[in-house]
Length: 329
Image 1 (tube, rainbow, N blue to C red):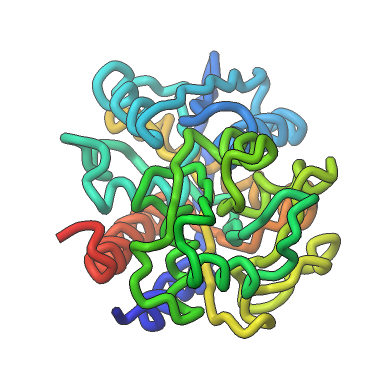
Image 2: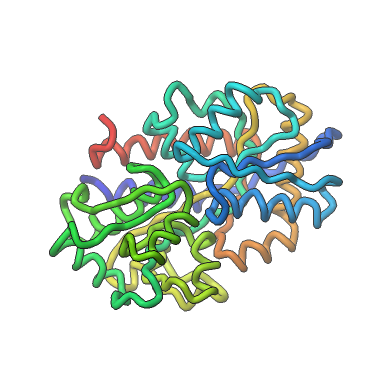
């Protein structure tokens, strides 16, 4: 399996994107709404709530963004709702990520494709983490992977994506980089969002968690979990500097999850351009730079057509990875 090339390809796509600006139109949503396609506490929920709050704080929106949690099908319920029932809603945006692209790439949203919606903008990239409960005897990623290698049935890893989804792929990348040739032996349990996955970790139902730094941060701050590896090429800045990378532990595994939004496929051009412009203006603000620093987000400045192309490339790249590990044919 050619993991190394696909890892580098995906990392380059996420982190090597260049900046593009789009000016806002005159349209202003009357009742702005953001759908988070998972239960509260996960990365999609964070994206909706933080961007909604910041848009209002920056006076880019006059109204409060209503956040609606619509869990199910790893984002598929929300995607189908937008495509089938709200296809021309100009006030609606939906949180998305590399996990969304992964499911679309693997055909996990039956009958749906990325072309049925309009892709708005990215607001950063969120590095993957592997964590354990704070009281776990495991303190390093090699310790965890040794347990998996020696007795795969003894370790269950929880994530907020479906089997074959982005959270799953991250732990498989780490396992393969450590020399676990048959990554299908890694026991992965899927939940609807990172918050639910961490809850199961704290309950002792699983032994490890795979997710993103933004969704893990609150549980680290509360003392519930400890991050044993960040899937980044080097340590993250600021308060995240205390978390070791997989790479410094001898495991060349990189996983970055972009975060952004899509909109209904028949949203008007005026509304689309306005949302793209608002999110672009927010991204360029000093406040958002602070939000990214506080939550471990890496830069990813893409809006409008360039973001649409980026997502299309991501879907193609993830299809390639998924075929290599036998998730799709």
